[in-house]
Image (cartoon, rainbow, N blue to C red):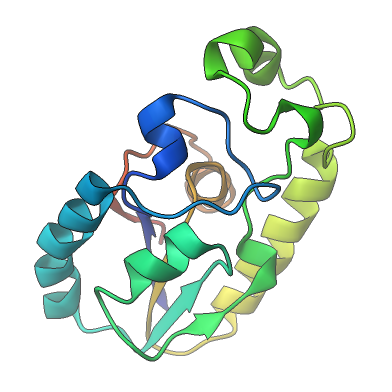
Length: 162
C-alpha cells in the first residue's frame, strides 16, 4: 500500500473575506497564503514525494509550486461547486452547508463524493509516496474514505491520509 499525504492550499483571497469558494470561483492565494506555503514547503520537500497531484484551481496550483514545479493536474480534485452560494459570506450559508444541503445550481454532495472516490481509487493505483494538494472539502472526504474520520483541515496543513 502506498502512502498518501494531503496538504490544503494556503489562505486564499476568498478566505480573507470569509466568502464561500468552491470550484465555481477560481481565486488566488493571499499574501499570507504565499507565506504559509513557503513556510510549509520546507517540510513537504524533505518528505520527498514520488507523485504530486493537484487540483486545477489557481490556489491549489500556486500552493503546489512551492513544493515541486512538476505536478500532475487532476480535475477530480476540484473543490465542490457551490453554485449560487459561491462568493457569499460563509455566515449566510453556514447552517445549510453544515447540514449537507445541496447548493442551488451547484454540485450535489453525492456528485462531489463520487468524484473524490474516483480520485482516491486512482491514487491507490500509484506506486510510492503521494502528495495531494487541494481543498478543505476534498481533504476531509479523503480522510473519511481512508480512515473513516472527517475533520477540518487548516490552510497549509499537511495530514497523512494513509
